[in-house]
Length: 82
Image 1 (cartoon, rainbow, N blue to C red):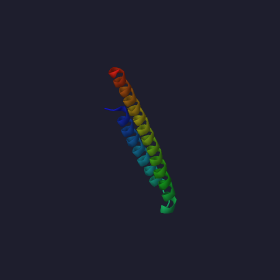
Image 2: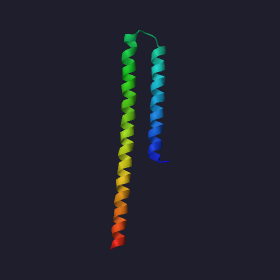
Image 3: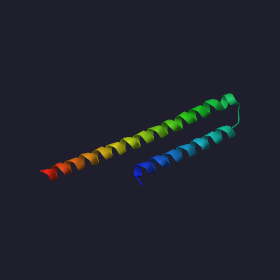
Image 4: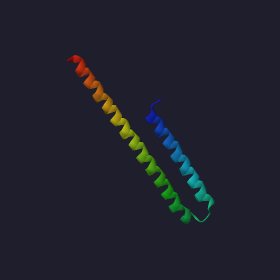
């Protein structure tokens, strides 16, 4: 299993778990709909923004590794052909 895919899956599961816990606590705290709505929106936007940042960062690192390994492979092929 690719380490990058593992990190993506773990971060997604962790983010959804934290999000559900936050929503549960917000709903249990009571108050009307107008008091709970901003908290729910902030929690949802915050958690999934962080998840998106993590996910895109891992994808960026994965692309950097793949491009570096491709450059290394290409340079090895050039060395063998000479």
